[in-house]
Image 1: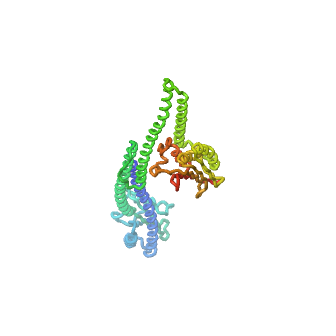
Image 2 (image 1 turned 180 degrees about the vertical axis):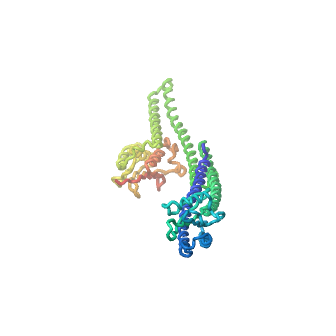
Image 3 (image 1 turned 90 degrees about the vertical axis):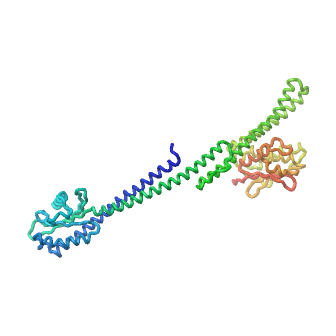
Length: 467
Protein backbone atom coordinates (compact mmCIF):
# COMPACT_ATOMS: atom_id res chain seq x y z
CA UNK A 1 0.00 0.00 0.00
CA UNK A 2 1.33 3.41 -0.98
CA UNK A 3 2.02 6.09 1.57
CA UNK A 4 0.46 9.54 1.26
CA UNK A 5 3.82 10.95 0.19
CA UNK A 6 4.20 8.35 -2.57
CA UNK A 7 0.63 8.89 -3.75
CA UNK A 8 1.28 12.61 -4.03
CA UNK A 9 4.77 12.45 -5.54
CA UNK A 10 4.24 9.80 -8.23
CA UNK A 11 1.50 11.55 -10.29
CA UNK A 12 3.22 14.88 -9.73
CA UNK A 13 6.53 13.52 -11.02
CA UNK A 14 4.82 11.92 -14.01
CA UNK A 15 3.22 15.25 -14.89
CA UNK A 16 6.46 17.08 -14.18
CA UNK A 17 8.29 14.84 -16.66
CA UNK A 18 5.52 14.25 -19.21
CA UNK A 19 4.47 17.89 -19.67
CA UNK A 20 8.00 19.28 -20.36
CA UNK A 21 8.73 16.38 -22.73
CA UNK A 22 5.45 17.02 -24.54
CA UNK A 23 6.28 20.73 -24.73
CA UNK A 24 9.71 19.91 -26.12
CA UNK A 25 8.28 17.59 -28.77
CA UNK A 26 5.56 20.06 -29.79
CA UNK A 27 8.11 22.86 -29.91
CA UNK A 28 10.34 20.86 -32.26
CA UNK A 29 7.43 19.94 -34.53
CA UNK A 30 6.14 23.51 -34.70
CA UNK A 31 9.54 25.17 -35.06
CA UNK A 32 10.60 22.72 -37.78
CA UNK A 33 7.38 23.29 -39.72
CA UNK A 34 7.80 27.03 -39.33
CA UNK A 35 11.47 27.01 -40.38
CA UNK A 36 10.80 24.57 -43.23
CA UNK A 37 8.02 26.84 -44.53
CA UNK A 38 10.28 29.90 -44.31
CA UNK A 39 13.06 27.97 -46.05
CA UNK A 40 10.73 27.24 -48.98
CA UNK A 41 9.82 30.91 -49.22
CA UNK A 42 13.48 31.89 -49.07
CA UNK A 43 14.58 29.47 -51.78
CA UNK A 44 11.71 30.70 -53.98
CA UNK A 45 12.78 34.32 -53.51
CA UNK A 46 16.38 33.33 -54.16
CA UNK A 47 15.37 31.66 -57.42
CA UNK A 48 13.58 34.80 -58.56
CA UNK A 49 16.63 36.93 -57.81
CA UNK A 50 19.05 34.56 -59.56
CA UNK A 51 16.74 34.20 -62.52
CA UNK A 52 16.71 37.94 -62.94
CA UNK A 53 20.48 38.21 -62.57
CA UNK A 54 21.18 35.43 -65.06
CA UNK A 55 18.74 36.51 -67.74
CA UNK A 56 19.06 40.28 -67.57
CA UNK A 57 22.40 41.28 -66.14
CA UNK A 58 24.56 38.54 -67.63
CA UNK A 59 22.45 37.73 -70.70
CA UNK A 60 23.04 34.04 -70.24
CA UNK A 61 21.48 33.19 -73.62
CA UNK A 62 24.48 34.69 -75.39
CA UNK A 63 27.33 34.44 -72.90
CA UNK A 64 27.19 30.93 -71.51
CA UNK A 65 29.02 29.32 -74.41
CA UNK A 66 32.18 28.21 -72.68
CA UNK A 67 33.47 27.35 -69.22
CA UNK A 68 35.29 30.63 -68.74
CA UNK A 69 32.21 32.74 -69.46
CA UNK A 70 30.12 30.48 -67.25
CA UNK A 71 32.51 30.82 -64.33
CA UNK A 72 32.63 34.55 -64.86
CA UNK A 73 28.84 34.83 -64.93
CA UNK A 74 28.19 32.64 -61.86
CA UNK A 75 30.91 34.05 -59.63
CA UNK A 76 28.92 37.17 -58.59
CA UNK A 77 25.80 34.99 -58.31
CA UNK A 78 27.52 32.84 -55.70
CA UNK A 79 28.66 35.94 -53.85
CA UNK A 80 25.07 37.20 -53.90
CA UNK A 81 23.80 33.83 -52.57
CA UNK A 82 26.24 33.89 -49.65
CA UNK A 83 25.35 37.49 -48.83
CA UNK A 84 21.56 37.12 -49.10
CA UNK A 85 20.83 33.71 -47.54
CA UNK A 86 20.68 34.17 -43.79
CA UNK A 87 18.96 30.88 -42.94
CA UNK A 88 20.10 28.55 -45.71
CA UNK A 89 23.43 27.47 -47.08
CA UNK A 90 22.59 27.65 -50.79
CA UNK A 91 24.45 26.75 -53.97
CA UNK A 92 23.53 27.04 -57.66
CA UNK A 93 24.36 24.43 -60.34
CA UNK A 94 24.16 24.74 -64.13
CA UNK A 95 23.34 21.80 -66.45
CA UNK A 96 23.68 22.10 -70.24
CA UNK A 97 21.25 20.80 -72.86
CA UNK A 98 22.70 17.32 -72.49
CA UNK A 99 22.09 17.28 -68.74
CA UNK A 100 25.79 17.52 -67.94
CA UNK A 101 26.93 19.64 -65.01
CA UNK A 102 28.86 22.59 -66.41
CA UNK A 103 29.05 24.68 -63.28
CA UNK A 104 30.79 24.34 -60.94
CA UNK A 105 33.61 22.30 -62.37
CA UNK A 106 35.22 21.86 -58.95
CA UNK A 107 32.87 19.76 -56.78
CA UNK A 108 35.22 19.53 -53.84
CA UNK A 109 33.83 22.50 -51.91
CA UNK A 110 30.16 21.89 -52.77
CA UNK A 111 27.29 19.75 -51.46
CA UNK A 112 27.54 17.49 -54.45
CA UNK A 113 28.02 13.83 -53.86
CA UNK A 114 27.39 11.06 -56.32
CA UNK A 115 24.06 10.20 -54.67
CA UNK A 116 22.94 13.84 -54.52
CA UNK A 117 23.91 14.45 -58.15
CA UNK A 118 21.87 11.48 -59.34
CA UNK A 119 18.83 12.78 -57.43
CA UNK A 120 19.26 16.26 -58.93
CA UNK A 121 19.51 14.84 -62.47
CA UNK A 122 16.35 12.78 -61.91
CA UNK A 123 14.63 15.92 -60.65
CA UNK A 124 15.72 17.84 -63.78
CA UNK A 125 14.57 15.10 -66.14
CA UNK A 126 11.15 14.95 -64.50
CA UNK A 127 9.24 17.42 -66.70
CA UNK A 128 6.17 17.28 -64.46
CA UNK A 129 8.02 18.60 -61.44
CA UNK A 130 8.59 22.35 -61.16
CA UNK A 131 7.98 22.89 -57.44
CA UNK A 132 10.41 22.78 -54.55
CA UNK A 133 11.37 19.27 -53.60
CA UNK A 134 12.76 17.94 -50.35
CA UNK A 135 15.35 15.22 -50.76
CA UNK A 136 17.76 13.39 -48.51
CA UNK A 137 21.24 12.32 -49.35
CA UNK A 138 23.76 10.62 -47.07
CA UNK A 139 21.60 11.45 -44.04
CA UNK A 140 21.43 15.18 -44.91
CA UNK A 141 18.31 17.10 -46.00
CA UNK A 142 18.16 19.42 -49.00
CA UNK A 143 15.66 21.68 -50.75
CA UNK A 144 16.05 21.92 -54.52
CA UNK A 145 14.36 24.16 -57.10
CA UNK A 146 15.01 24.27 -60.85
CA UNK A 147 14.49 26.72 -63.68
CA UNK A 148 15.43 26.66 -67.36
CA UNK A 149 16.71 28.91 -70.13
CA UNK A 150 16.27 28.19 -73.81
CA UNK A 151 18.86 29.47 -76.31
CA UNK A 152 17.75 30.31 -79.81
CA UNK A 153 16.90 27.35 -81.99
CA UNK A 154 17.66 24.83 -79.16
CA UNK A 155 15.08 22.14 -78.54
CA UNK A 156 16.47 21.27 -75.09
CA UNK A 157 16.89 23.97 -72.41
CA UNK A 158 19.74 24.78 -70.10
CA UNK A 159 18.81 24.08 -66.44
CA UNK A 160 20.08 25.85 -63.39
CA UNK A 161 19.26 24.38 -60.01
CA UNK A 162 19.35 25.94 -56.54
CA UNK A 163 20.21 23.50 -53.74
CA UNK A 164 19.87 24.56 -50.10
CA UNK A 165 21.23 22.47 -47.27
CA UNK A 166 18.92 22.09 -44.26
CA UNK A 167 21.83 21.28 -41.95
CA UNK A 168 22.25 24.98 -41.27
CA UNK A 169 18.68 25.00 -39.90
CA UNK A 170 19.26 22.04 -37.61
CA UNK A 171 22.11 23.69 -35.73
CA UNK A 172 20.07 26.52 -34.11
CA UNK A 173 17.30 24.02 -33.35
CA UNK A 174 19.84 21.78 -31.63
CA UNK A 175 21.15 24.77 -29.67
CA UNK A 176 17.62 25.79 -28.63
CA UNK A 177 16.81 22.17 -27.71
CA UNK A 178 19.94 21.99 -25.55
CA UNK A 179 18.94 25.18 -23.72
CA UNK A 180 15.35 23.98 -23.35
CA UNK A 181 16.48 20.57 -22.16
CA UNK A 182 18.71 22.17 -19.56
CA UNK A 183 15.89 24.48 -18.41
CA UNK A 184 13.43 21.57 -18.27
CA UNK A 185 15.82 19.38 -16.28
CA UNK A 186 16.45 22.29 -13.91
CA UNK A 187 12.68 22.87 -13.63
CA UNK A 188 12.05 19.18 -12.94
CA UNK A 189 14.71 19.15 -10.21
CA UNK A 190 13.30 22.28 -8.61
CA UNK A 191 9.77 20.88 -8.95
CA UNK A 192 10.82 17.59 -7.32
CA UNK A 193 12.41 19.46 -4.42
CA UNK A 194 9.30 21.63 -3.95
CA UNK A 195 6.94 18.64 -4.32
CA UNK A 196 8.99 16.63 -1.84
CA UNK A 197 8.92 19.48 0.64
CA UNK A 198 5.18 20.03 0.24
CA UNK A 199 4.41 16.30 0.45
CA UNK A 200 6.56 16.00 3.58
CA UNK A 201 4.71 18.91 5.11
CA UNK A 202 1.29 17.43 4.32
CA UNK A 203 2.43 13.93 5.35
CA UNK A 204 3.65 15.21 8.73
CA UNK A 205 0.37 17.07 9.22
CA UNK A 206 -1.69 13.98 8.41
CA UNK A 207 0.52 11.90 10.73
CA UNK A 208 -0.22 14.42 13.47
CA UNK A 209 -3.95 14.04 12.79
CA UNK A 210 -3.56 10.24 12.93
CA UNK A 211 -1.92 10.57 16.34
CA UNK A 212 -4.88 12.68 17.48
CA UNK A 213 -7.35 10.02 16.32
CA UNK A 214 -5.39 7.38 18.27
CA UNK A 215 -5.70 9.47 21.42
CA UNK A 216 -9.43 9.97 20.77
CA UNK A 217 -9.81 6.24 20.12
CA UNK A 218 -8.36 5.56 23.58
CA UNK A 219 -11.07 7.74 25.08
CA UNK A 220 -8.71 10.53 26.11
CA UNK A 221 -8.84 14.28 25.61
CA UNK A 222 -6.33 15.81 23.19
CA UNK A 223 -4.95 18.58 25.35
CA UNK A 224 -2.04 19.65 23.14
CA UNK A 225 -0.75 19.00 19.65
CA UNK A 226 1.82 20.37 17.21
CA UNK A 227 0.41 23.32 15.31
CA UNK A 228 -0.33 22.53 11.66
CA UNK A 229 0.42 25.38 9.26
CA UNK A 230 -1.91 24.23 6.44
CA UNK A 231 -5.18 26.11 6.90
CA UNK A 232 -7.66 23.33 6.08
CA UNK A 233 -5.76 20.70 8.05
CA UNK A 234 -5.36 23.15 10.94
CA UNK A 235 -9.14 23.61 11.00
CA UNK A 236 -9.54 19.83 10.95
CA UNK A 237 -7.04 19.55 13.82
CA UNK A 238 -8.96 22.10 15.91
CA UNK A 239 -12.25 20.35 15.11
CA UNK A 240 -10.80 16.99 16.14
CA UNK A 241 -9.49 18.45 19.40
CA UNK A 242 -12.90 19.97 20.15
CA UNK A 243 -14.50 16.66 19.19
CA UNK A 244 -12.23 14.80 21.62
CA UNK A 245 -13.43 17.06 24.44
CA UNK A 246 -17.08 16.58 23.45
CA UNK A 247 -16.66 12.80 23.15
CA UNK A 248 -14.99 12.69 26.55
CA UNK A 249 -17.77 14.80 28.05
CA UNK A 250 -20.39 12.65 26.33
CA UNK A 251 -18.75 9.46 27.54
CA UNK A 252 -18.58 10.87 31.05
CA UNK A 253 -22.23 11.96 30.85
CA UNK A 254 -23.25 8.53 29.62
CA UNK A 255 -21.40 6.83 32.47
CA UNK A 256 -22.97 9.20 34.97
CA UNK A 257 -26.33 8.70 33.31
CA UNK A 258 -26.26 4.93 33.62
CA UNK A 259 -24.79 5.14 37.09
CA UNK A 260 -27.58 7.48 38.20
CA UNK A 261 -30.18 5.44 36.31
CA UNK A 262 -28.98 2.28 38.04
CA UNK A 263 -29.17 4.03 41.39
CA UNK A 264 -32.66 5.37 40.75
CA UNK A 265 -33.85 1.96 39.55
CA UNK A 266 -32.27 0.15 42.46
CA UNK A 267 -34.18 2.15 45.11
CA UNK A 268 -37.74 1.16 44.10
CA UNK A 269 -36.62 -2.34 43.17
CA UNK A 270 -35.08 -2.84 46.61
CA UNK A 271 -38.24 -1.54 48.23
CA UNK A 272 -40.46 -3.82 46.12
CA UNK A 273 -38.16 -6.81 46.72
CA UNK A 274 -38.00 -6.18 50.45
CA UNK A 275 -41.75 -5.97 50.94
CA UNK A 276 -42.31 -8.98 48.68
CA UNK A 277 -39.85 -11.07 50.75
CA UNK A 278 -41.51 -9.85 53.95
CA UNK A 279 -44.92 -10.93 52.74
CA UNK A 280 -43.54 -14.27 51.54
CA UNK A 281 -41.73 -15.04 54.79
CA UNK A 282 -44.65 -13.91 56.95
CA UNK A 283 -42.65 -11.17 58.69
CA UNK A 284 -45.08 -8.49 57.49
CA UNK A 285 -48.54 -9.14 58.93
CA UNK A 286 -50.17 -6.13 57.24
CA UNK A 287 -50.09 -7.37 53.66
CA UNK A 288 -52.46 -4.65 52.49
CA UNK A 289 -50.03 -1.89 53.48
CA UNK A 290 -47.16 -3.80 51.94
CA UNK A 291 -49.08 -4.25 48.72
CA UNK A 292 -49.86 -0.52 48.67
CA UNK A 293 -46.17 0.35 49.03
CA UNK A 294 -45.26 -2.16 46.33
CA UNK A 295 -47.85 -0.56 44.04
CA UNK A 296 -46.53 2.95 44.74
CA UNK A 297 -42.94 1.89 44.08
CA UNK A 298 -44.00 0.04 40.92
CA UNK A 299 -45.73 3.17 39.65
CA UNK A 300 -42.61 5.17 40.47
CA UNK A 301 -40.46 2.57 38.70
CA UNK A 302 -42.69 2.62 35.61
CA UNK A 303 -42.52 6.40 35.47
CA UNK A 304 -38.73 6.31 35.70
CA UNK A 305 -38.47 3.70 32.94
CA UNK A 306 -40.85 5.70 30.77
CA UNK A 307 -38.73 8.83 31.19
CA UNK A 308 -35.55 6.91 30.40
CA UNK A 309 -37.17 5.50 27.25
CA UNK A 310 -38.28 8.99 26.24
CA UNK A 311 -34.74 10.32 26.57
CA UNK A 312 -33.40 7.35 24.63
CA UNK A 313 -35.88 7.93 21.78
CA UNK A 314 -34.99 11.63 21.61
CA UNK A 315 -31.26 10.85 21.56
CA UNK A 316 -31.77 8.35 18.74
CA UNK A 317 -34.07 10.63 16.66
CA UNK A 318 -36.96 8.17 16.83
CA UNK A 319 -39.45 11.05 16.89
CA UNK A 320 -38.15 12.61 13.67
CA UNK A 321 -40.84 11.16 11.40
CA UNK A 322 -43.58 12.36 13.78
CA UNK A 323 -42.79 16.08 13.52
CA UNK A 324 -45.66 17.95 11.90
CA UNK A 325 -46.89 21.52 11.56
CA UNK A 326 -49.62 21.79 14.21
CA UNK A 327 -51.49 24.43 16.20
CA UNK A 328 -49.84 24.28 19.63
CA UNK A 329 -52.74 26.20 21.22
CA UNK A 330 -54.82 23.01 21.11
CA UNK A 331 -52.08 21.05 22.89
CA UNK A 332 -51.71 23.64 25.66
CA UNK A 333 -55.48 23.62 26.22
CA UNK A 334 -55.44 19.81 26.43
CA UNK A 335 -52.64 19.90 29.03
CA UNK A 336 -54.45 22.39 31.26
CA UNK A 337 -57.12 20.08 32.86
CA UNK A 338 -54.51 17.55 33.99
CA UNK A 339 -52.21 20.29 35.30
CA UNK A 340 -55.12 21.95 37.07
CA UNK A 341 -55.93 18.65 38.82
CA UNK A 342 -52.30 18.24 39.88
CA UNK A 343 -52.27 21.84 41.19
CA UNK A 344 -55.48 21.35 43.20
CA UNK A 345 -54.06 18.13 44.66
CA UNK A 346 -51.06 20.12 45.88
CA UNK A 347 -53.21 23.00 47.15
CA UNK A 348 -52.03 25.38 44.39
CA UNK A 349 -53.75 27.42 41.74
CA UNK A 350 -52.88 27.47 38.03
CA UNK A 351 -54.03 30.02 35.43
CA UNK A 352 -53.85 29.83 31.64
CA UNK A 353 -53.71 32.91 29.41
CA UNK A 354 -53.73 32.56 25.61
CA UNK A 355 -53.41 35.68 23.46
CA UNK A 356 -53.49 33.92 20.08
CA UNK A 357 -55.93 31.37 18.73
CA UNK A 358 -53.51 29.92 16.19
CA UNK A 359 -49.77 29.39 16.49
CA UNK A 360 -48.48 26.74 14.09
CA UNK A 361 -45.14 25.10 14.85
CA UNK A 362 -43.36 21.92 13.76
CA UNK A 363 -43.70 19.69 16.82
CA UNK A 364 -44.46 16.18 17.97
CA UNK A 365 -47.68 16.03 20.01
CA UNK A 366 -46.35 13.56 22.57
CA UNK A 367 -43.09 15.43 23.15
CA UNK A 368 -44.84 18.80 23.30
CA UNK A 369 -47.19 17.43 25.93
CA UNK A 370 -44.26 16.16 28.01
CA UNK A 371 -42.49 19.54 27.79
CA UNK A 372 -45.46 21.54 29.11
CA UNK A 373 -46.43 18.97 31.75
CA UNK A 374 -42.86 18.47 33.06
CA UNK A 375 -42.08 22.19 33.32
CA UNK A 376 -45.48 23.14 34.75
CA UNK A 377 -45.40 20.23 37.25
CA UNK A 378 -41.98 21.40 38.41
CA UNK A 379 -43.34 24.93 38.94
CA UNK A 380 -46.38 23.61 40.82
CA UNK A 381 -44.11 21.62 43.10
CA UNK A 382 -42.07 24.69 44.08
CA UNK A 383 -44.81 27.38 43.92
CA UNK A 384 -46.05 29.08 47.06
CA UNK A 385 -49.64 29.50 45.89
CA UNK A 386 -50.01 29.83 42.14
CA UNK A 387 -48.58 29.03 38.73
CA UNK A 388 -49.36 30.90 35.52
CA UNK A 389 -49.08 29.76 31.88
CA UNK A 390 -48.93 32.46 29.20
CA UNK A 391 -48.97 31.66 25.46
CA UNK A 392 -48.07 34.56 23.16
CA UNK A 393 -46.34 35.37 19.88
CA UNK A 394 -43.00 37.03 20.50
CA UNK A 395 -40.57 38.16 17.76
CA UNK A 396 -41.89 35.65 15.22
CA UNK A 397 -41.85 32.78 17.69
CA UNK A 398 -44.49 31.02 19.75
CA UNK A 399 -43.56 31.48 23.41
CA UNK A 400 -44.98 29.52 26.32
CA UNK A 401 -44.03 31.25 29.58
CA UNK A 402 -44.57 29.18 32.74
CA UNK A 403 -43.88 30.93 36.05
CA UNK A 404 -44.50 30.37 39.76
CA UNK A 405 -44.56 32.50 42.90
CA UNK A 406 -42.10 30.37 44.84
CA UNK A 407 -38.65 31.13 46.17
CA UNK A 408 -37.05 30.86 42.74
CA UNK A 409 -34.09 28.79 41.62
CA UNK A 410 -30.88 28.85 43.67
CA UNK A 411 -27.92 30.42 41.92
CA UNK A 412 -25.93 27.22 42.38
CA UNK A 413 -28.71 25.11 40.89
CA UNK A 414 -29.60 27.34 37.90
CA UNK A 415 -26.61 26.37 35.67
CA UNK A 416 -27.38 22.65 36.15
CA UNK A 417 -31.15 22.70 36.14
CA UNK A 418 -31.49 20.92 32.76
CA UNK A 419 -28.81 18.29 33.45
CA UNK A 420 -29.92 14.68 33.67
CA UNK A 421 -30.39 13.29 37.18
CA UNK A 422 -29.53 16.66 38.72
CA UNK A 423 -32.01 17.09 41.55
CA UNK A 424 -32.67 20.19 43.57
CA UNK A 425 -34.58 20.33 46.82
CA UNK A 426 -37.66 18.11 46.61
CA UNK A 427 -36.79 16.74 43.17
CA UNK A 428 -37.87 13.28 42.03
CA UNK A 429 -35.54 11.69 39.47
CA UNK A 430 -33.91 14.74 37.96
CA UNK A 431 -35.22 13.78 34.50
CA UNK A 432 -38.31 15.96 33.98
CA UNK A 433 -36.53 19.17 33.01
CA UNK A 434 -33.80 17.20 31.19
CA UNK A 435 -36.51 15.62 29.01
CA UNK A 436 -38.07 19.04 28.42
CA UNK A 437 -34.71 20.51 27.36
CA UNK A 438 -33.86 17.56 25.07
CA UNK A 439 -37.32 17.58 23.48
CA UNK A 440 -37.35 21.35 22.86
CA UNK A 441 -33.88 21.22 21.29
CA UNK A 442 -34.87 18.21 19.16
CA UNK A 443 -37.85 20.12 17.75
CA UNK A 444 -35.76 23.21 16.95
CA UNK A 445 -36.89 25.33 19.86
CA UNK A 446 -35.26 26.89 22.91
CA UNK A 447 -35.93 26.73 26.62
CA UNK A 448 -34.63 29.18 29.19
CA UNK A 449 -34.90 29.20 32.99
CA UNK A 450 -34.36 32.28 35.16
CA UNK A 451 -35.70 34.01 38.25
CA UNK A 452 -38.26 36.79 38.06
CA UNK A 453 -39.17 39.33 40.70
CA UNK A 454 -40.85 36.47 42.52
CA UNK A 455 -40.37 32.83 41.70
CA UNK A 456 -38.94 30.95 38.72
CA UNK A 457 -39.78 31.58 35.06
CA UNK A 458 -39.41 29.16 32.13
CA UNK A 459 -39.61 30.52 28.55
CA UNK A 460 -40.22 27.84 25.89
CA UNK A 461 -40.03 29.12 22.29
CA UNK A 462 -40.69 27.47 18.92
CA UNK A 463 -40.38 28.98 15.39
CA UNK A 464 -43.79 29.80 13.90
CA UNK A 465 -44.66 28.21 10.57
CA UNK A 466 -46.74 30.29 8.16
CA UNK A 467 -49.31 28.18 6.36
